[in-house]
Image (cartoon, rainbow, N blue to C red; front, side, top):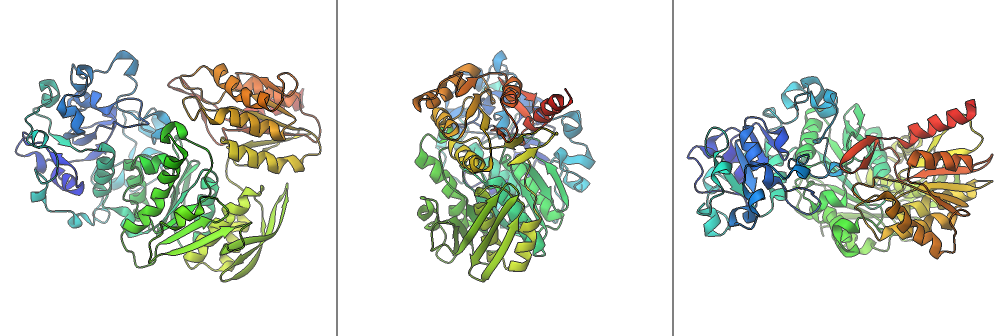
Length: 620
């Protein structure tokens, strides 16, 4: 694709006036935001915003040296507001930042950091038959490093014409004209001047360019987005199953899984929502595979950082809103508004011949603000347990250790469900899936069949059995609200003690730490506070903050809880305190395959560690 076509696709992007005359005609073979991934022909986008540990502008020289066709920068870079070591120098970041190379933090990437060689292909390129670990997409669609096939490249003609790409937008004259030039070593790169494209928000530009490069794939299928504090992963999975039972072919991405048609694989990253390039690449793969629906777990980070721009949503689903991610969003209101962006997208998405639909949990106190965002010509379907006005409502709920039974009252009739899923929160998740299915014309018979076949989702109320005489449960619950729900469900199911192992992530929402101490000791007979992704924080300092919440409830260290940094030792200690009939809940990590210490991702899996420790106990 020509650079000019991409610049035209981003309304606020400008090619600087001193760029080479042939700049707009240069061929772009891929879009990257990590200088280490730059190959000849790559368009390098310098990310610089809240939530990213390093500034991509530091790596423009490195991108140029690796053969970038152009770089996308923000106006501050050109106006001189960056310190010299960022604006130019020799293009090298300070030593302590050398691992960043323009990367977002590990949990915000989609495998662009240090995936295993078999995924990256050894030299940074995935092997053709295994694009980014995504199974076997067609060779012509491998990792966005070649041109997408013609059938994926449709829709480019809807872009503004090329003559509107230079000097046609609203940037200041001194930036548009190129009079405030970057340092020569940045402009020179390798093989001549590196064209610079300026955008007031490179995150938005990245999404614009990615969507155009892959031919706007979301316009070619229906897209369902699921947002909320809790339940997104399970709800996304259930919706996919319901739609497939109704005769559709689906793709999905979320915290646990990636799926394209029949191919399902574990999400190897720590990101609920991949970066915009990976989002659009996955959507393009779904189109190429013949999917007519995409179901997207849509996080507040992904929505706020423009990773989900151009997803052209047809259905927006809200699970619930509780306390989370205030480290990033700052306030609860900002967090709610980030989630609401999913519903705002319904009003701007392309018309695909059917009404846009908002599916909202009416039991949530914030339901009204999301319902009001559904377009006037759209539809609203609410669900709930408590609110009698819910369009889809659960009646006569029976919850046990073996699953859930309830009657779903819906606008098209009632249906009795006998689910393998445990936990009352899965009543809400399944109700949301029912509402989406109804909105898309799936019959109650097919909805029932789909939901009753689902055994569960990895790391969600997953039972670990190795012959021990007590129950071990692994769950991803990592917010005070989620822990309160999970432990509240487990409490009446145990004939003995309820024991938990919990922590709180470093460099994340500080306010929730004592709240975790309150939520866990409220339900448990004994709790072990431990490590959970400390990043660059001191682990014991985090644990001490959690413990203040327990102490405020009159709990005492040694009697009601322990503080153990090493997570393996913490789990072993919890098992040592367990007897026949007890339940031990390992919370916070769920399906995750690593623990983040400093900048390193160390191999870790609560489920694997639990099995090893339990087998050792049984065998000894």
